[in-house]
Length: 119
Image (cartoon, rainbow, N blue to C red; front, side, top):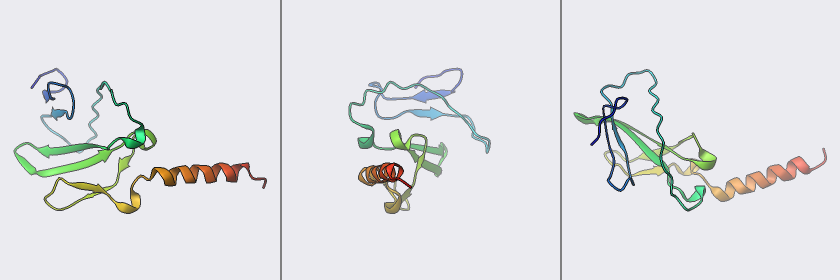
């Protein structure tokens, strides 16, 4: 666990992979923006990346929590819709809203064909 002037405490694995835990003294209804830099050594393509999970909870009452997932690439900066079973950390993308690489490629191709067609 480490301390710094901006964040009271944070921790991450010694190999720097897997997760980061940020400790905040309080969270209000006002927006809280945290900006940090990560070294990315991922060698695959964006479509094979798993979404990142962000979980906020009360340290002393962990049942009071909220979790969101965020993606990158074509889904950069967009929240990914998901559902979780009650009492479980196992979440799945909602079937009708899952990212479908092939469908997106077909949509892009149809859009190009439509734009190239004379009116």
